[in-house]
Image 1 (cartoon, rainbow, N blue to C red):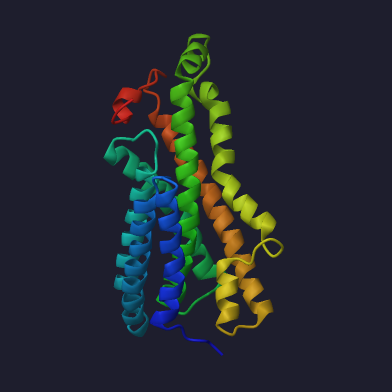
Image 2: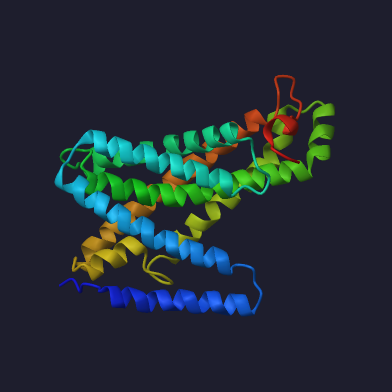
Length: 265
């Protein structure tokens, strides 16, 4: 039986965030504003999406699903761009991050809906939107970490890369070690999540299903499916963004071109 939460229950949980914000202000951690804004955004955004999904679930229409999917992809691509330490020029960064998300999360979600879950219809919002949301959220983190590590390290080691190029290496060879480190950085969060699942932590989807009254074994099956989908989506997304960024870092003559890609260096 699902225990319904009241506004008072949520207010008690919000008080913990307010207490944390007060403590961070007292300690001068400079994260008070970010905490409060993030908490407010979480509340407003989730309430709005709850109302939107209620309408979409009651009126299954592929046009609405596509519209929501495009909004989710666009916002996720923008968030990846905004998390970079060295800012890429907007359209290049947004295009590369969004393309990587599309290749990974969208394609993996489509495959899962049509061949594994076999929802009827395959675009049913009850399955398509939550599944895509989970993949986008985790893939976005991996892509952001991998892209940031690649750009940061390449900038710091630009002299070494140029020396390797002068010694006859191709751009791919000169960047190979940095690319491997960036791939590991992007995959660490999801690998840690898989390694700790069921022992250190109970993943969110499984916990939500159990709280909603689902049988634990069925909840576990869905969680295993989601973890595998997230891992593959994250891996494909990080590989895609590193490949695209590696090509954009060099011109046709294998010369670094940070000045054409970054807003400021």
